[in-house]
Amino acid sequence: MEHTRPAFVAACAGMLLFGMAMLSLGSVNAFLAERFQLDQIGLGSLAALLPFGILAGSLVFGPIVDRFGYKLPLSGAALLLAAGFILMAEATSFGAVQAAFLATGFGGGILNGGTNALVADISSHDRGARLSLLGVFFGVGALGMPALTGALLGRVEPTEIVAGFGFAIFAVVFYLLAISYPPPKQRQGISTSQILQVARDRVLWLFGLVLFFESALESLANNWSPAYLREVSGLDAETALFMLTILSASLTAGRLVLGWALRRYSSRRILMVCMALVLIGTAALSAASGTVSSAAAMVFLGLGFAAAFPVVFAHVAERFPTMTGTAFSILLIVALSGNMLLNYLLGVVSQTWGIGVLPLYLAGCLAGLALMLIAALRASHSPSNTTRT
Image (spheres, helix red, strand yellow):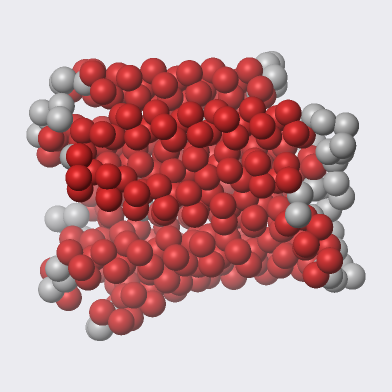
């Protein structure tokens, strides 16, 4: 594995940048709101542009890396992130800020998909373990950016902090350009029929639906649990927000443990354990009445969320060894669709019945995930569903 280490380091650096991109709005919204006199509608438009950019990046990265390799897509995506952060800091109009968030999301979507596909391509027997370790770096970026921003505020201007993040990314760009990557798997070009063959695969769509619910569960816990803990569990606003740090830290720790566990136990058993942990966390959230019980719920949820993405990516990479990027594009489009749709539906439901429905809603999503996972695992082991190329 020594010869793949530089590429694995590059993937980890790219995933760390994606973690920073995902938390960019939360880290800079206060100074942007003050600078451009933004109301909730203005901030909401930025919150919508970021996932839209990620969705677009997820759509295009797969065929590009399968056809041209990883060097230019990954380094170009990192440059987009650098440009996005610098533009956020230097923008003199709200339109420029919107463009910055769109560029940041687009680059982040390419980095997310591309780094996962790269690690899947350079790994063999320990693919799931290495993908889980890659996920740890998302947590480092997601936790590190707001923490570092908070530590520097008061001593450094917000615009200088954000611009500093952007200029620091250039060091990663230079590394991404300097190293060697696996050769393109479709150097001769990708035909429409090849893409359609991947897109028609039933097992791929079943695994995509697993991530449809998994992505939604993770996002629902992040987006809605602070409001639930304030209104239902009685926590103050600061403590409720701190629970998100516990959730992110436990997910990151879970990915570290997962890398060890996947080398010793079957992925099926690990997935079942993680779903049980999410169920325990959901029940604990429903019963939470103070700081300790709320923190326990976040720990169980974070640990339970650790396995689905790395394990599903490993299964799909094994199934599509020569079209990994294209297959991952489809997975991520389905996952992001679930994220957006089920968050929107919870907004509609909570408008009528209140945020107290969150644990029941999470349990419903978990049931959908379990059904799709059972169907996907059965279909993937069926004699009529052999591994594709």
